[in-house]
Length: 291
Image 1 (cartoon, one colour):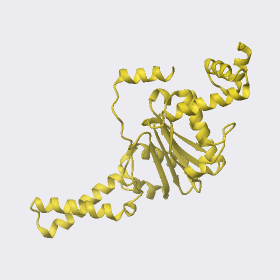
Image 2 (cartoon, rainbow, N blue to C red):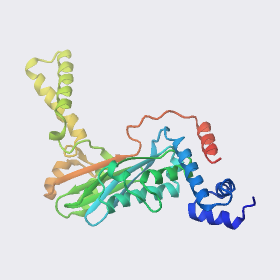
Image 3 (cartoon, one colour):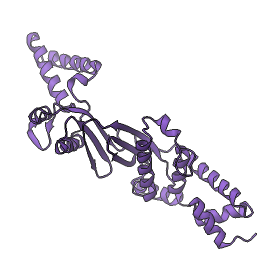
């Protein structure tokens, strides 16, 4: 049967699918719009399912802050090319907004939410995958109820940090968020470091000191000194302030008569093992994905 251009245009406006995909769907559905919509949906899901196993180590991290609510979110894709796509960025920001508006705290809650014409977030995700030709994963997020002064910082689109302090010193909160982004603290203070990590590090340092022939009576002092130095590097309070290395964050907070309630730092792709891909193969994969 003959499919009119106006019908293809109408279906495209309804589904946002490509012109050729709409025409093929209408031909297969004998011009029936509802059946064509179902066919396009099934095609998109099938395309998304075929990409579900691909590693997603690129993407973006975003922060959204409202009057008494904030969220930090990381969503991943396969390539930096896709991470810059408007549809991908729109998807990420829509998810962040949804988390804030509905007070969502975990992935299970998020998966049950609907968005616009999509029955659930998984359907929305698969739709974006079908358009981009790349796998997408909502990796992690944290919603923070604001009880104090929030500071946020995003370096490009790859590193994001949120810091909440007591009081209302917005400049200090912002400075601390920048520091967290730059210095990558793992814990707030030494008291937050798990005991098993402290014990293991102490054991290793003790063995090293003994192997070096240090006197037994000073081994404990050597170990404690090295432990403090190690933990100062990974705890926010022990780190040197990036804007003034002559003082630690603990000293800065004492000077400002402030305290940190919490902090979060996301770096896109952090901890994800990436298989090395030949650049020519990656370009070819991008071309194939558009077919």
